[in-house]
Length: 290
Image (cartoon, rainbow, N blue to C red):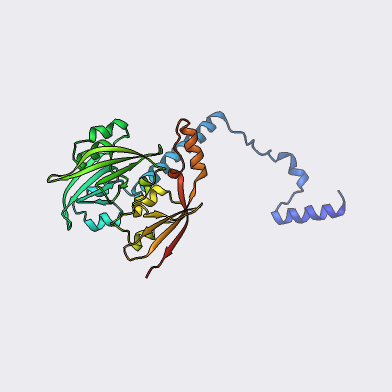
């Protein structure tokens, strides 16, 4: 050991209050204990972690459950109003209003208030259900086939059901003293303009309803929100126009959702119907008139 090292150890010993040289006690310093735990200590450690997990879960899970809003059937409320139904974009048709939460609902109105309310479990789609719905009231038909997707065409009493098979099912209705009854069902091709357009449309959307239309929405979603377009003015491009109740015109540029189209063709190799049902909104333009 050179002189510099001796001076360093001396200062180190003095700082620790050691009165004997380090070399004198070096052999009596126990080696540090091994970090390897005994088997029984390992088991205690694992058990402790498991217990801690359950304690934390017991505290957090009830808290998280209490923070999550409870699921409920919104339209089962006894004090539901027509205004609330309008705000939720329910389908109003004649004296009926169709709504959906965890169940299918039909409200009967007198124009000013709700006079009756029917609720049904959601119906599974079956082709034969439409035939069973014939000669029944529209209220009863909902039990078999669910609530309609949107109104049919203005020239006749009809309601349309849209499914992902390239076709629409249109219920033909008649008005009786007891309400609307189903006379028959017509299967329509979604490529047929009679399916999508309603030139004689009388129930025109408001500006507020049109503000809900955004790029990326499917044609089904658009029609379900503001009804069917009156016309297609496109030449090469697909341009649908909707007349608003205040005289303005909403013009939508529609584009083909290629991914959805390819998926549809793959899932329906035997179908020769494809295209229109995979349209989505590419651009939105509001045109002021007058």
